Length: 383
Image (cartoon, rainbow, N blue to C red; front, side, top):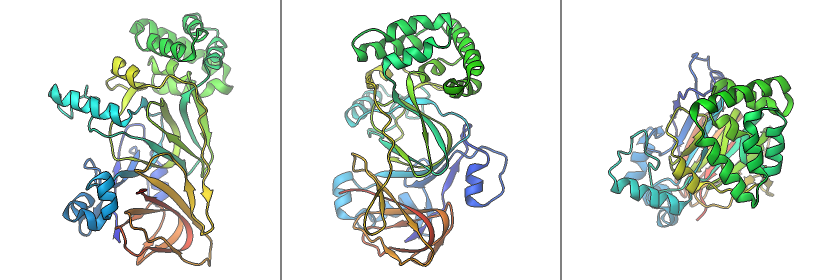
């Protein structure tokens, strides 16, 4: 197996302390948002044999296994991250596979550079993802019932929100949600800034269920995403709980430290809470306008001690082992590629000693055994 040397991305919303605390190092004072583990070309993990991209390219079937290559192609199908949100991330959705292929092909035909700020599709893949909390973790996930959203907005007593309240009372549900989100994102910018300012003041004054939106507005003053955020379910995960985010589900992470895994894609369509490009027509094509329960996931324990986070896709499979002091070793050998990440304690993986924040890549079929006292997350695929 290969010990991984991973890149930390310094996005502005990142926490300045959470990842350093996990790694047991002094903070630099700069935001540290995500640590990437995998073979994404934007920041591939490094090994003694070269980058993980180079290692896999040199012998895909040996590293990934013939079944994974046949199913997903000669690349690692997932990207594993440690995510540390010190401020809200953008409100966003991801396309399904057909939408991603269509959107990517269209932008390629129109010769839009892949690094252009108005480019929507960086690749032809979908991006389902799972976030598992390591600390208390706040987020937004999926639309509220329209009548509940109307009640939340109406309770603020802000006159300029009343047209949105009226729209949310329309039928059917999907049309109500579509119309109100469209109205928010296409409103006159100056009028929207005024509405957001009044909304933020009311949220700060009322507190309670409105407190998260006052905090969002503090980071994104005047952004229409502040109003859009109030259409979504607010979720607070406890450590060990997770959220699965499928195609078309609007969401945003607000604060906390977690382990995130996703299909190896960078396709994001933003709804707000960002200075970046918002393509309203394409966004409306991709969003699923249906109220939903956030569906907090808790791991399913198996007899061998593996706790699995069940999801409906095959590009990734995330599980964890909580290893007690003096417990027997766990044998993790699989015919698929794996990344093992320690998040607590001290764990031995093969010949490697893992401490919090350190990880290894295990090629398909390579013997893998973990022991010690701590927590290990296991990322792999289903074939």
